[in-house]
Image (cartoon, rainbow, N blue to C red):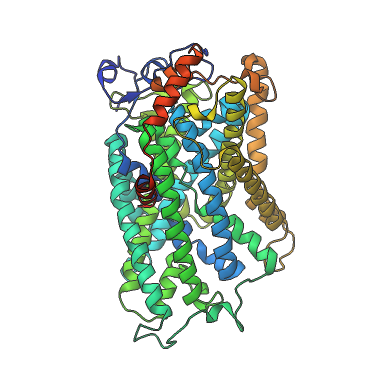
Length: 576
């Protein structure tokens, strides 16, 4: 496919098209999303994602190897009690960050979403650093997930002796085929894969309860109850040290829920679907993560020798081990297939997370111009090609030292999600401050974060604590291991890398972009009008008379249904 920009006539006629947002635009610029500034010579991303896609995209991005495989290390280092507590705390933080993100995404449904919010409300240099580190994290995770998929395939004896390249090539071809159909193809694939994962999670809940109650005839343990939480076992391994390790693992496991905010620019009805998806995703993830991990902690001892067996990575999955301990035939193989699907779902999310972030950065002058190109079908072709080229790094794993190379590649962005979540919370805090300074009230907002600005303060605090916990674990690894520079930088290299990106853009801005020289954007200088949704302009536009504003607010609140029945139905819709 040619990368040469086309005249874009078809894109201009596409009824579901939205351009990118340029932070430097004037506060008096048109607030109509159809008239925002786009990168020169490019077309527009298409708004082809529906509500069902939005909900499944976030779930699909989060339910993967972090839950099914990586949770094994959390159980071994912290025990079932630490796992349950750590995932509950981080789950609460995810709820707060999704509420803050939804509030800003409904108001400003721009391409690049939270990266652009950080640039606008905090500092362009910090937004540049967070955006590129987030994009690089997805770029490097793709080949890692493909390699993980190859490893999972080796769970089946029939794959023995077959070179991994035989699996890497068809997996890459499948990802290319999905991208050919644009964002709608991505959404449909994610919808199907997520349904499979959700079905597996629900099925394991039922199976876990049956195993714990002694209802499996082949399980010699009989009734288990909570015996693995008591002596001679323990619910909290390695004390506070072990809990810090789980705390960090939980933060990374939830990665992907923020993709609903990133998809705002390609959603048909952001005002309705983004808040709904944000609420539903959090509750569903809480159910799938918390309940499943609680059940695993009940039926699998943290010191099980099966965690240390040789072979495929998925053999160490606590979910597979739970089935093996119950001596249920065939089901471990079936669940291994679910893990493989989950890993490929995350690989599918990689292409979306990286391509949209890089395209938005490039469109706003923070990357090479050719990466901003979008074809007539709304596909950011250049960034898709870049992502798939990074996918070819999966072939590195065929080398003997391939694993070491991957470790260092992933270390460059290992902490990126904590910086992103914390920065989203900070951007929301500063947005609210600028909103108030310009004489606006929260009553004007089409969607308000459930716990307002205080929820974002708490979210920011939890992220800071998580970064401190990671620093502590990097310095003093669990298991009385001696301090190792290698282990420290593998765990914390993302911190210096982020600072290097920040300093690089700040120095560049000093000479090329004078408006970005200040250390941060002052509250009084924050532009809250550019990129605002068209329907919101009549309420919160810069030149709207106070009487018209009050009337619009009254009309806005009049549209909301009240009463017990409406509240009950709202809760049901939020969960299901």
